[in-house]
Amino acid sequence: MDDLQKRSWAEIFTDNIRHNYKAIRAQLPEGCRFLGIVKADAYGHGALRVSQILEEEGADYLAVSCLDEALELRQGGIKTPILILGHTPREYVRVLIENDITQTVTCLAKALEFSEEAVRIGKTLRTHIKVDTGMSRLGFLCAGEYFDEGVANIVKAVSLPGLETEGIFTHFSVSDEDGNENRAYTLSQFDLFTTVISAVENAGSFRFNIRHCANSGAVVNYPETALDMVRPGLLLYGYGDTSGRFGLKPCMRLVTTVSTIKYYGSGTDVSYGRHYTTDKLTRMGVLAIGYADGLPRASSGKCSYAVKDGFAPQCGSICMDMCMADLTGLKEVDVGSEVEIFGEKNSIYNISDAAGTIPYELLCAVSKRVPRVYR
Image (cartoon, rainbow, N blue to C red; front, side):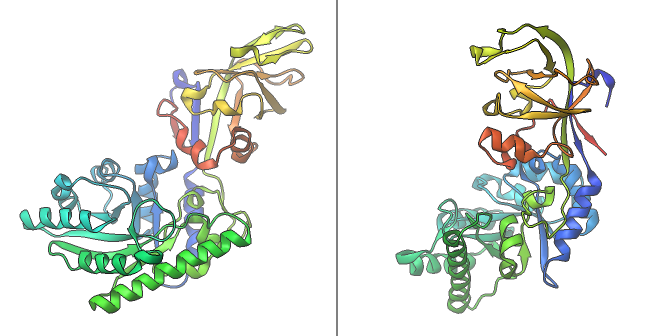
């Protein structure tokens, strides 16, 4: 990284990505495939670079949210199968096929559209069926009174011309949450998913080659749900293993620098809204990072950042491009000193908890103007 850019940056530890991949893979049943979630720029880690690593390590599949994300990988030379988890308009069926991209089918209407377009151009589109078992988002609705209709619609979808249905999947909503109620809900989702698969295969004399439902939480907490493939997302980047059983390592360190240091007397108001007032002579540092870089404004005044000889409490409202931190007593911190927002010394959970959010949001929020430095 050019020193002129040395304002704030995100260090990405490629060896940790490789370590996490191997650690997760080692926990899987023999023959179980590994799908790496690289949507949202690989949770801020850089989709192309992470995909290259996963491809080198032998991942079986990658997953993205949309066509633009898939094309970025194909144009970057990635050959591994790619699954689009979200919606793609029917007019892009040719693009999907020509770039060997697998498309999720979430309802019969979309299956019909994809089929019609594929037949029209004389091609075949590879697809995975999505079943809504309780996430209440995308997928064929099969719960309760909708079971028979949902199964019938899936049978119709997998029988349509121009479509090659390779897999079927669902998504757990609380597999990473503790408690008996959440466990019961996750297991009920899994039971419904496997019941739907059996009903479809029996009714249509059809067999799905890849059945997958285990997201990060399920990989850790419900190993019985691994089936034919797992889909770790946050887990791959070093978070979500609350038991520590997998021995995962965080893959991102967000760093900024001290741009200015000023001394304020007692009774000085700091930043927008005057929400913080000094109560003593204060050595205040202005840090070169703000909410436009991905620092959550909701964490204002509720967290500290790691510096060379301790932790510096963040003071006042976080601004768009900068924020303030109390450096009183931190004698080794000067203008230009590095400040770790989160990473090896300061857990990302300290910041996400302060902001009342989850680590996913913080990783994805690190903006494009923050350079990624691969270590």
